[in-house]
Image (cartoon, rainbow, N blue to C red; front, side):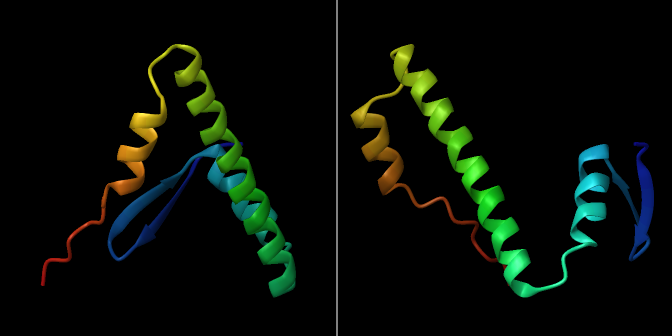
Length: 82
């Protein structure tokens, strides 16, 4: 699949093959229920990837309880500039 270029508000957006594939697949979604199921599948996929990454770091001794507790306490919100 080739990349495509789309213009939005004067800015060119280049879609990569994965984005084009997802756009094509999402064009087939007909109901809100189907959309929610797909969103859940994607969320589960990325949650699994995070779990695998943390397990790999733990196996290398680079991640443990202390790092998990620190990460849980962090507030990484982007401040709004008005």
